Length: 419
Image (cartoon, rainbow, N blue to C red; front, top):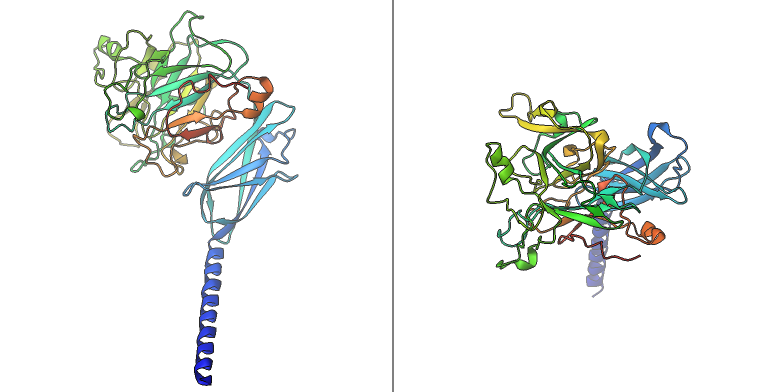
């Protein structure tokens, strides 16, 4: 009996030692895949007057969409120890109490390597949060109704973020051309075109009116649909479809294309006679369509007429076959712009400069949101909304911080909110 007890004791000790060894190795392996990140926040143009202590810095893993937050110290540094190796995006979005501005900045594509210290600089600038018109929502990826609607129900919503009535008459809306970072995409627009002074559109449209036909009250919006139709009617997947008949305007272009001897797309582009049409300014393709994998859009005003000298031939790469003909828009004319790409690792495919949108966003971190009925919606700034007694949307010129993906479109959903 004593011998058996000794054998059992010896076996137990061996098992414990093995477990401890494996655990130790596992911990060592985990540690071997960790790195450290130090982010230094500085003022744009070496502006020393900006308060850089106490800023919240978010570090986002582009693979699994997990994030960590850090706070800057007196020297503007935020430290992130023991970060798993991978690719990250970092962003600063901080409202400065009493000054009524937000510090905003970001850095994308940060490579964190095992057992190394990674140092990153983010340059922030002061952004006036009480702007005028902003893009509140874009629904672009298509309905999850069994391919009945497809992407015919797209819309964009423009919101008045100020405390004065603003007339949308004459406002331009443009979709920016470029690959989205989806599978198979490998030619970022910025490889061939400089976006520091101009952005490049494949369609431009304009709100009609004589100057006082389309008022937008503070905290309210207008919706511009591709088709102002009810896609719920006779649709087995009606719960996932939209009724766009409440849109203020629609983007009908078939007659305009045909008047120029070109072919429109009557299958996707309908005309609701009860809803006014946008004014078509330029269309490179068959219709005014947002990219269903990820769209980038701007709103702007200009007194200048567009002409042939504003059209740019774009080739994906040197020697590529057929060009795309894009209309260039001065960055200085842009009121608001957003970059929505296909996934969290698509930073290289941004179409907007940082001065307009210092980040980007996506419906799903891993992509795959095509025909999902999901939509990109701007967040409510609850602090300012409470302060001013009206709905104020978050606007830090960083769509990665300002927007959220939602499961179903929310056209004019903020108009009824009370603060």
